[in-house]
Amino acid sequence: MKRLAIAAVLFLAAFAASATEDGQWRATVAAAFSDFEGDSTFPVDDSTIGLQIMAQYQFNSWLGAEAGYHNTGTFETDIGGSGSDTEVSFSGLSFSAIGYIPLPSAADENIDFFVRLGYFDFDVDLTSPTLTGGTQASIGHDTGLVAGIGGSIKISEDFSIRTEYDFYDIDDSDLWTVTLGMEYRF
Image 1 (cartoon, rainbow, N blue to C red):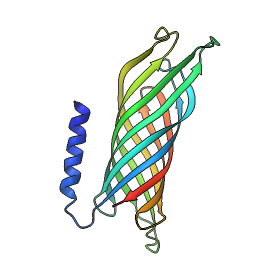
Image 2: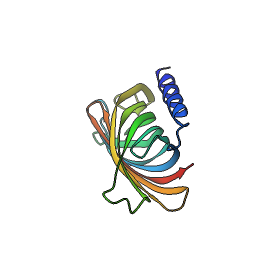
Image 3: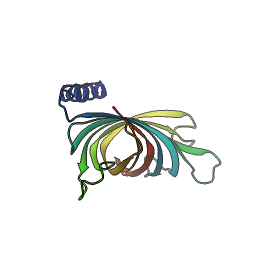
């Protein structure tokens, strides 16, 4: 319920702001190359490829709001040489403020640089022979802050190539993600 309320508030705020002339909608689909370094709660250190889908409303030349769906794929490791892998995966939503960094020269309007600061709410699935008896267990969800930096390069009037580097604050673990995707502007 909490996720739905946050998504509804952000959608309504973006919709209300869309009446301005300067605003622009953006949608992105990206491959997410993630690295996870777990702790005792999630005893996994691995890298994987996942998916991100984002929708953004850019209010003006320096500020935007973005909502996204993230699926990290499955991180896995063999604990203690048992031959059975411990696996953890994260999927869920994020909501962020996007601050665009102005370039020193206004000569090139085809490049955007930005910083992100936001909030995520991920479902956590864990499979472990020692922690869950070998069965998959949804162990609830984890919430926290997400921060990142990125950029996009216009390749046509409507399409851009977008990349970014993000950090998700998951308990005492580290989740870093590099994304590469296509952005559509409308």
